[in-house]
Structures are given as structure tokens and as C-alpha cells.
Amino acid sequence: MITHAGNIGIIAGGGQFPLLFVEAARKAGRTVMVVAHKGETAPEVADAADEVCWVKLGQLGKVIKFFKSNKVSEAVFLGSITKTQIFRDVLPDLKGLSLWNKIDSKQDDSILRAVAGALEQEGIAVRESTLYLEHLLFPQGVLTKARPSSQQIVDIEFGWKNARLIGQLDIGQCVVVRNRTVLAVEAIEGTDATIRRGGLLAKEKAVVVKVRKPGQDFRFDLPATGLATIITLRSVKASVLAVEAGQSLLFDRDEMVREANAAGIVVVGVTEREDGTLQM
Image (cartoon, rainbow, N blue to C red; front, side):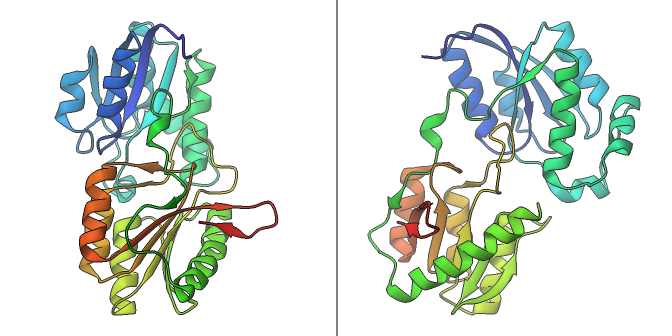
């Protein structure tokens, strides 16, 4: 049983994950201090917080000052940030700019690890994003009425290997394949845009595979899927969504499965055995 008490901070991006965490943390007896990002974090998250501080990307000094003034000793990273914002809507303060200039690679993990390191140097421990929300991890097995065909299983296995490779390079977590051909690889644009791009090339029956990066840090950037993912799959007549079980988040499960069943889409949680074979 989790017995932590006192204030906890959230560095919040977009989506419903931050709001779900606020609700769960409060049930666990925590007081919740939210750093909300302008243009990303939903107003409902700010409204639900005990205290809120609105920032732009890069305002690390402002984040630290807010947490320290509210006696925050633990924090979590939750929610998505539109990655293309790093090219158009960043307003770093001196501390943020100093950290940015020290980062050799401007990829996801490098940036987040650097920010987490800066917080921990200030006495603010960064906790796993699944704290209080382990039940949201993607389950193993087929979730839908439709099950993967033998050809789809071949494509899942093929996509899995390629998704692992791009994860090793910290490029992305998702690939779109058909007939053992890679049609799209996720980069800065995100999963939905990748699905649309690959799905259009496939014409129909695309297989989407989403996995964790090797050495995935549960403190941030876990893969996530939900109802919106299925709506995107349906829009390009894709046929399969295969996700690494236990290593990613699943939102709106009931609605997601219902939508997938209506569209005839296979949704399956996959694990990798020690010998490299996949279990579905």
C-alpha cells in the first residue's frame, strides 16, 4: 500500500492523464500542486489543483520556485506536450536556458532526464508517472471480438522488431506496417499523425505497433493509447493496434473497445518472452 503523504507536484501536459492523477492523488490524501503548460494543459486540471502555476515551455526556474514555495518534495511528469512546440513556443528563463545548452541531444529522453535531474538537485524527487494509477497499464491479450489473423501476427512481429529499433535511437515508439513493409515511423509528429500517414499509404488494413523504448523510464513519456487512437485507425481503415502490455497506458478502455469492435479493428496487448518471441 502506498503511504506517501504531504504535497505532491505535477508537471502537466495535455490529455486526461493529469486530471486522473489529481483525483487519485487526492483520494490518497495528497495535496496537489500543478505546473500547467499554456496551450497544452486542460483548464479542468488547473481547476482541480490545490495550487496552480501556469508556465511556458522552458521556464524551469519558475517551476522550481513554485514547488519550493509550496513545500513540494515529490513530483511527477504527466500528459503530452506537442513536440513541435519546441520550435515555436518556448520561452526559457535563465535556468531553463542554461540546462538546454547543456543537453547534447534534444530527443525526448535526454530532455526529460535532464529536467528530472535538475529537479532532484533541488531536493524534488521525480516519481513514476503510474503512481496511484497502475490500473491504467495496458493489459495482455486480445481486448476485442476480432482476433489477429496469421498474416496480421506476422506483421505484428515484423513491426515489433522495427519499433524496438527506432526506440533504441530515441526517435519514437510506433510504426505502421503492411505485408512486412514499414510504411511510417513515428518521430516528432506523434502517434496519430504517424497512423494517418502510414494508413494512407497502406490504403487499408494497416497494422500499427506501439512499444516502449528499451530501458523505458516510468517517470515520464510512457506510450499511451485510447479512444482517439481507434478513431484515427478507423479513419484510414487500419485493421490492427498491437501495444506492449504492462509498459504503456490505456485510457477510456470501455469506449475504446466498443469503437474498435464496431469498426472490426483488432486491439491486442503483447509481451515479449525471454527468447524474443511474442505472446498475445
